[in-house]
Image (cartoon, rainbow, N blue to C red):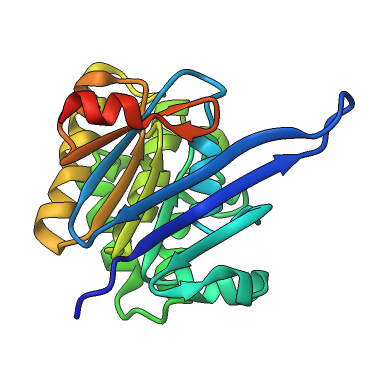
Length: 230
């Protein structure tokens, strides 16, 4: 029987602050099935980005369970979570996290090499060209505009052909033309590879392209809105 690539069960996240503990996530339940494009929307501060961080194993929840590829992340240390993601899950965040001492091509090839994929450089060039960056292969991050750095980060994520892709505002730093191209690539990945996409966005038009949308409100998935939509 097929296993959902991502399951969250009653997940909470509470972080300390100078004013006392702050509840970021409050009992989130969520299943993402293979091949599904899920959009997560909601106002700033509602917990959308924290939801992705916890789901991807970058942040440890205060309570509940996160099952990534049917593995309880609580049983793994940081290295174990990285190994679990490698070659199967990819992440794109608003901050690009490009390695400053590597060229754009080398940044894209790096996760392929870690996953021991053959032809890493060729695959990196292919994705750079698909994202309109063929003339930027040898450029370093500081030589690229913000929009170009965002596209390099996207190429790096898409190049591993992940089973599950997390994308936090992937078109936020792009103009309308490049944003539309990136959106097409994201949804093409879901269709072509049978991958799942978890997409955080403020763009309601982008969210409307997903198979399903959930709305975050004050650290919870707003089930009243979900029921109204049904």
